[in-house]
Structure formats: structure tokens, C-alpha cells
Length: 452
Image 1 (cartoon, helix red, strand yellow):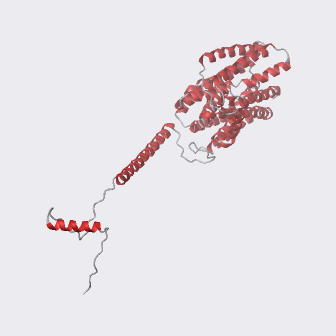
Image 2: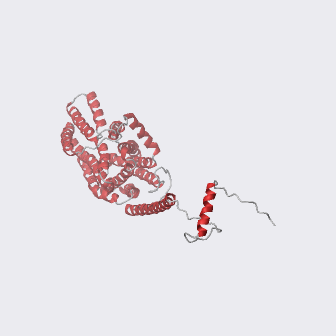
Image 3: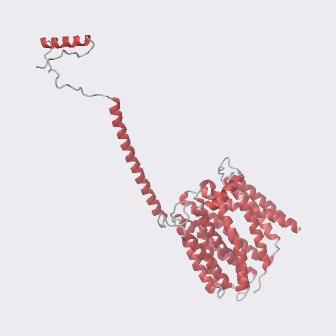
């Protein structure tokens, strides 16, 4: 089967340009206020799109495309902002809504691309982009909340260095990066080779019909709020496990029959969008919970991994499909999903932050039980601390009483004279003797007694 390789060749530079924006622009979200940054980037991309729509010079078109690609990273700045604005118990829901908007845009673009290619000139795409982006700019201006700048006093190059440090010192982030590379490769491989699959035998569909398969993917995107609420009730690790497991079943179905019946194509399309979104939201929720002051950098690392996977899926998947057919390409997706499962199982859901391998902390998958155990442990710790404090206070009280009042009982000599009536002759005699003793200097000199 012959595939126009120029389509694949044009995808890779665009992905690389977008990755440059991810690397050098999205970390600014941890350094400056994000509202003006988002508004500025949206205005720049909308304005540059005007040049793309009207230029007739290829060199100018390529330069403008380069800068549009770099500045088109607004969704990846919105993701950490949504995590900051949402309460922890609703963070996954907020992230799923933002991610669903991103995926919805990709799918709608596929549908529009098919329609445009069939009926009108390519410049119409850029006219639509101009209008949509300026409309979004107005909506963002009126609705986007302002959020204080983070890491006051930090420098831009310091932010970039710390991002590189996160990528090699955070076990959870490294695990999420490896999983994201594999899952993104399967996603891109499917959508790139789907055009070749449906355009050839036994389907032989037109460009318009192939583009309409993007509408099928919208079914999975529409379930984003439900996915987010479900993940909010689970430990993120368990939601990732569920997503990977269902993707394995989806790609098993693809390997078995995707080239035989169009119903299988529909099921694989829905399953891929739905379960990959489940996996991505759970991974993002877990990673952004590592450090609230570095969410833009953490998200940039994760999204860069996605684009590495996209490059891998586009190049390797297209080559495998061309040389070995749809079944071998489906088996490749199955192998990549198996790799993501192996990576996930190397590290349990409750291991300490800087533990690379193992299952310390158990394997409880429901967040409610984990929170209940944490609350019980916190209550026990507080009770022990209270008891220790009470014992310490009691000891200080006793010590203070003894140190403040140095009262001692008089020690009486066993030979001390018995109490005599006041005014008796013997009393006067004894008092006189004591007086003489005091006058003589208080010495107790006695005459030697001769022993008989």
C-alpha cells in the first residue's frame, strides 16, 4: 500500500516547533502572572494568523508558522492555572474539563480539515482561526481570573534549570513521563494511520467521511466531566491503571479486527479517546500535586513527553503500517501499552515521594479510605502529643511548687529539752544559759570530764 510520506514529514517539524514553545514559554507560568501572559500569547497567535491567511510567499509563510507554533501553548499554561484555582478534592474534574477542551479542538480541527479539503481553499482554515482566536481573546479578557505571580525573586534561567532537575530527581514525574511517551505514541499512531486505513481497501472512504471520524472521537471527549469526578474519588494511580488496562483491551480489539469491519474502527476510536483521557488526567493530577509552586514546569515536562511520543508514533507507526500493514501497526500499539503498564507497576500508589521502586505504603485504591486512614493517624498523633504535653505541664507544676516554697520541717534533736511552762524558773535558767553561750561567741566549750 502506498502512503504519501510528505504528510508525515510535515507533521514532525510542527511538533518540534510546538515543543520549543513548551520548553521556553510555559515555564513562565511559575515566574510571572498568567493572565497577561495568556492574553498576550492569544493576541500574538491571532495576529500572526492574519499573515498566514494572506501571504503568498513560502518563506514568509514558514517564518510565520514557526512563531505561531511557538506561541500556541496557551492550553498548557491554563492546565496548571486550573489546578491552582480548583480545590484539591475537585482538581481532577477541573483538569479533565481543560483537557477535554484541548482534545475537542483537535478533533473538531480534523473534521474541519476534511470538509475544507473537499469543498473550499486552504486559506479558509486560517480565516476561521483568526475569528475564533479573537473571540477567545475577548472571552478570556472578561472571564479569566488574575492569579498572583509565583516564585518571586526567581530568574528565568533558574526556572529552566529547576525544570531539568525535576525531570531526573522526581520518581513520580519520571514514571509519568515514560507512561506518557508510550500512550501518546499509540494515540498519534492511530490517528495518523487511520487516514491510510480508511482511504484504502476494504473501506475506500472519501476525505470527508474520514474527517467525520473525528466526530466519533468527540463521544469520548464528552465524557470528560464524568471521568474527572470518578478520578476525584480514586487514588490517581488506580485511575491510571484502569485507563491502561482498558487501552490494552482496545488495542487487542484493534489487532484482531480493525481492518475487517468499520464497527471495530468506531469502537477503537471511542475507546482510545476515552481511556487515554482517563490516563492523562490521572497522571496530570498526580504530577501537579508534587509541588504547587512548580506546576507550570512539571506540566511542561509532562507535555514534552507527550510530544516525544507523538514524534515516535508518527514516524515509527507510519513506517510499520507502510511496510507490514494494519495488523502489525495495531500490534505495535499493543506493545507500547504493555510497556506503560510495566512502568506503572514498578512503583505502587502510596510509596514515599523519593522512592523509585517498590510498593511501600500498601495498595489501597480508593481515596476515601486513604483519607480516613490519614485522619485516624493524625488524630492518634494529636492525642499522643496532647498526653505528652499534659505530662510535661504536670512535671513543671510540681517542680515549680518545690522550687518556689523552700519550706522544711524543723529537725529536733532527740536530747532537746522538753517544753517547759512559760515563766517557770527552769525556763529562765535555760534562757540565761543560752544568752551566755551567745555572748561568748556561740562556742560550746565544755570542761573535760575525768573518767573514773
